[in-house]
Length: 420
Image 1 (cartoon, one colour):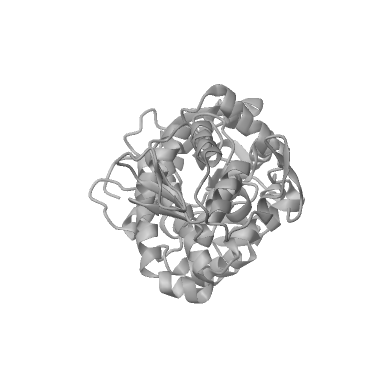
Image 2 (image 1 turned 60 degrees about the vertical axis):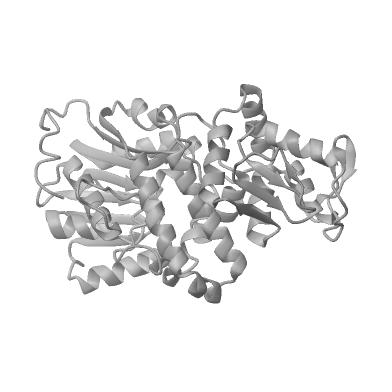
């Protein structure tokens, strides 16, 4: 993008060339444009402090501090990208609590006028947000998951579970909540000894090993992340599970064989809505006559685009679906949905645990990478907390089966019978 002339208010403008050393007082035009940006983003109840110390609309609220004039112009050109980039670089700071600031922002953004929502979606398509076809899926996953197991080991739980935990009554620790999540999934699937399970997008393999160890099932787990698959194989070997768990470094689209259960935890966000019908076909060919399936995914109530910053810096190809969009997985293949559970508050709590551990390790993270990386990931984790606590994002668990399967319990009592 460097050197490329864009048009801003009808005038050619090179936003990257804006002079960052120009600290002269803001003009009336710049103040008006900053208010216009806030209006376009849903008019969040936040304060803006400009580079000369002047506060716009000085309400008692968390504040965004613009350290330089250029930050304002970058926000004007592309707010959903440059807020994150300038925060990471220290050109924007937040006073009054990052989570509080972002929660107010997401609450307002969720209520933006329909015409602004349509404009945001159009700009996202125009700016070519990265999709997730098979030839690109591996690169997208490498971008996030293969930055190093040592990094994730610093702040995840002992089993390296990087998805929403389940805080059943009495559970307060991250480790116990992740164990409860895996148990919760297994109970929903009603796994029985000797059954076969396919796990699509298995992460570091904790659930696959848990199912094999505690439910005596045979699991084939697919993942395109080389780092994660290597870790999962080493753990399975150390736990004596090699004969019951097979970790395959391959795309979910290449799943073969038939299974009693299909499970996918945290993969659908990377699939892309254009590929949901294809995923449904893969599940259809993979499940036996009375097979059951469970998909656990970040979701949303309305089909709003993922922020450009998240797409480019954190999750290339990522998109959280609505329940309506997910129907493309089930309806064409006549799957019966048995249960939909929303674990949204559980994910906010999971993220708070992750962020607390991340902050405890920030000196080590800075040593491994740099301070900009620390700020980027703190913004990502805190922004995720704000997304879930404000209701902008959801966490869906969808349980489904073949329409003629009459062998399952008729109530949920068995799922909740006994402690987690």
